[in-house]
Length: 83
Image (cartoon, rainbow, N blue to C red; front, side, top):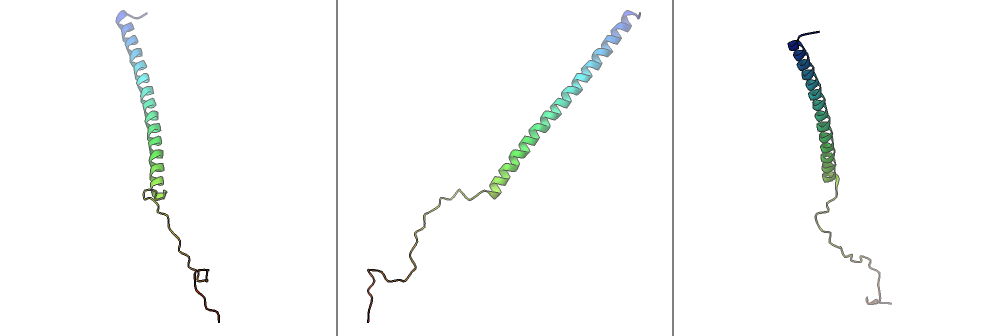
């Protein structure tokens, strides 16, 4: 059996080792969370850019166009000469 000082040193070393392991585990967790957040942000950015580039021009209101008949067939209002 060791002395009292030796037992305190062992306990302190074990505590320090345990704290280092916890810190490493915490760092790994933060790295994974950061990677996940970055991946989600990248996907959102990609979708936003793609929708901006590929999306239609919905900003300008569309005006209805009136079609003018282009046929020259005579109708009831057009005078015709028969002869």
